[in-house]
Image 1: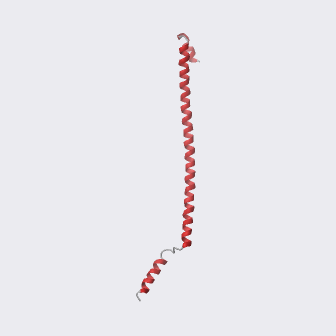
Image 2 (image 1 turned 90 degrees about the horizontal axis):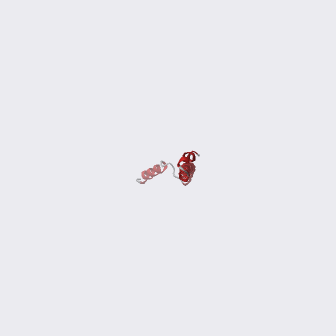
Image 3 (image 1 turned 120 degrees about the vertical axis):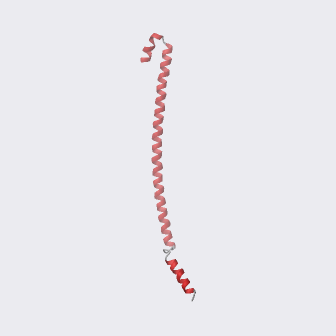
Amino acid sequence: MKRIPWLLVFALCFASSGGSFAQEKVKTIEEKLSETNSKLEEATATIATNKTEIKVAADTMWVMITGMLVFFMNLGFATVESGFCRAKNCVNILSK
């Protein structure tokens, strides 16, 4: 007689657990896998966008640095050419 209520309690606990059968667990694993795949695709797209932004920033910085070097090259050539000429012709050389 004492075993019937315990079996009833066990049956109610198992029934109220949401029915954890093997097929339902496979569905939840498949759902989690599809969610993970979608998150992975979003992360891949974000990484690709970040790579593109970094590439554009690096290209811009490279153009700025090389432009600065060209300005300093002009200053260097002007200094060399003004050193090779007479003082009265220095302004004429620098204006060229």
